[in-house]
Length: 425
Image (cartoon, rainbow, N blue to C red; front, side):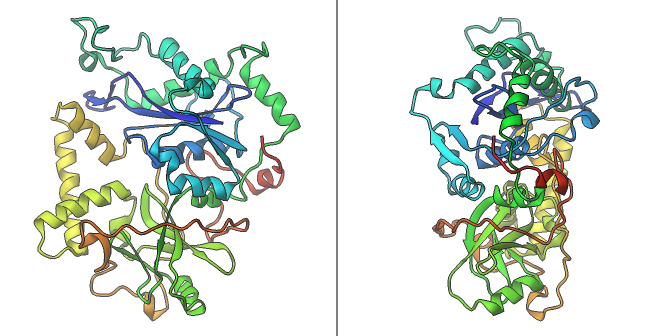
């Protein structure tokens, strides 16, 4: 599998106001052997591990959502499974501890291509070229290099494609055009090459959809105290975490996984069972659907306007930002401003799930205190907290949570499908 990013040379517009938003980023995953597109992630998020994580999730999961959400797509998108090797460039997101740990947990080997040698990732470079020449060459709102752009052409004024329409267009191009095109060497449609390959090497899948989401999440380490786990100035606690702490009276920090797109819960590794426990945030309403980037923006505003940064100050700052964004969304015409607002509104971001575990605990140590789930330690009160080193956790093969393995947005699979998947593509 090859993964890379590109900024689409196309201005997209808001579905309702029809005002231009900006040019989105596209992270794609390509199968080296067949050339089919395995998955992608389009958003206004700049290239980071977040976009890599979302692309990996989409590539690995079966595309069960396809025809229910995009009825205009004619063919099937039957790609799924864990890759054995991922070929990437030298972007900092691919050298991050998050990416390295996710690949370690999933048994994936990382192969870095030499600098300034794009032919080491020829499959994805060829795909990006086809995307620009076949799909976006005549699209209204397309951007050009300065010396190529016609003097009377304004991509913002000519833009008519909404982000929702762009998603549908990308699916049609990937499934009905690119994956059906002929393989340059095998002289057969790429999708047929994939189908024949998986009959001999059946793709492997993680035990459940939820476990996959946990394993590809970002990683950090935190101490487990009587108050729970502090992360980004927020407190997380549960009765299961209290029992974990009572059974392991250790000064060592625990391994924690989290989803940067949803801070409503984190996952703490039990060193004995090698299982991740889902731990909800005590600030239930504040963290519901809250991204890490949004939380950092809220904290910055709260520090400027409040003498004491508590959950009330954070909630007020969050509501204030939301009102400003909603008000300015219909009037602002500045490209960079609207792109940032689109990022705040979550345009292009995958749907956020909620913790299914009960938010309440019968253990007295996990009850909310007067600050209602806000820690007085860490980055909420300290703009520049000390960075903690991230040790490489031991690889675990028996990872499970208390969350039912229900279908998650953009793919999911039944337990019977999982049982039949035993080998990697």
